[in-house]
Structures are given as structure tokens and as C-alpha cells.
Image 1: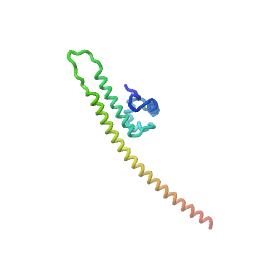
Image 2: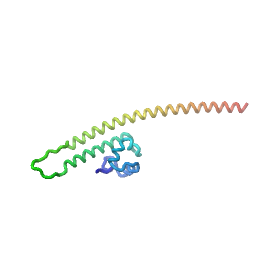
Image 3: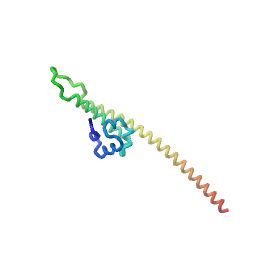
Image 4: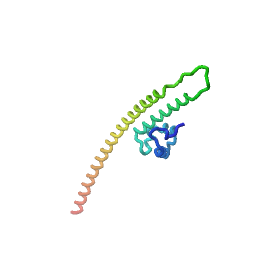
Length: 145
């Protein structure tokens, strides 16, 4: 079983912040996904997707270690049943890149929508402020008469 600090890019302080947000193990990290990890300060969608992809590489390494562990002597040599680590690493890196690209694209779309909503709200607030100012001026004018 791997610890959070076994993941590339996760040090002691980041792991402590993750634990404070309920992510105390690699399994909990995988279960929470990108959304859960984005709740931890310092994690955006891109970094979260990269860290999750790195956990997959850890999983692939663990499979390689289990298969490569010394077995009982056999009469004939047994060929390894897993791919070479370099292929597994390349596959994990390709998957991580694909996931990161997808998450980044979704984040960009969400940011664009948020910007539109904020702009609309600001415009509405400015209009309401102008109306309130006109109303106040009109009321002040009536008081003078």
C-alpha cells in the first residue's frame, strides 16, 4: 500500500492538507476524484488530474512488483505476464495527459461561463445602483420643494 507522499509532487505539507480535507490515503484520493482533490487548497483541476494519473502509475508499479516478486522455483522458467515497466509508464503518462487535457478544457469552459455570469450580475448591479441613485435624487428634490 502506498502513502500519499509516494505520489510525485506530494510532500509532507501537501499530504497534511489533504488529510485535513478527508483524503488520508491513496485509495481515498482515487475515490474522491478530481472534484474531491480540488477542495484542498493549492489544487486546481489540472494539478488534481495529474496527481490522480500519478496514482494510476503507482498502481501499475504495484502490479509489476507483485508479479516480479520471487516465486517458488519451477521446473521451467516462466515468462512475465505483465508489460515492461517502460510501456506501462508510457501508457500511464499518455492517459494522464489525456485526462489533464479533458479536465483543463472543462475548467476553461466553466471559467468562461462563470465570467459571463459575473459580468451579467455586475451589469445588473450597476443598473440597480443607477435606478436607486435617480430615485434618491428625485426624493431629495421633492423634499426641497
